[in-house]
Image (cartoon, rainbow, N blue to C red; front, side, top):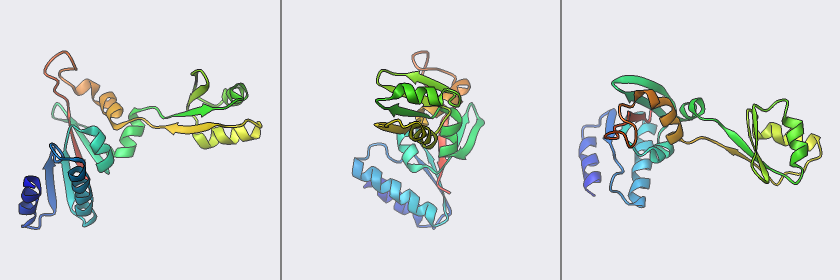
Length: 182
């Protein structure tokens, strides 16, 4: 309730730009959902909503655009989707009783095919193309699921050179993540 009261006080002046610093810390799941929807509503009204947070899994659900700053320098400014796609590898999990047929058919086109027991992990080809190739070769599919990298993976990948202290080596300082709802 204290956070809601603070937000209400800040909104009295009808500001067009709002800055939230770690807004979900200490909130229960209902409070987190409320503040996420509230920030989206503010952005939908045309306001600029900045959120500074280290809870990247929450930011992946909340942010439309990211601004990442490390050592006082701008590292990235893009949509959340572009940020993740630029820094992580998207793969497709393929399960089939005819994996050998699918593997042979996609071998010329896919960037990387990894055998993982009863499935293939394919990069460099989207699930639609793999499905079309499987169908053209008469292969039955039991699973065809795209796997997307996480915001955490992308953040670590893109900020690696901007971190003064890495986990276990110092005080754990990391670059700041600022998100904008507009």
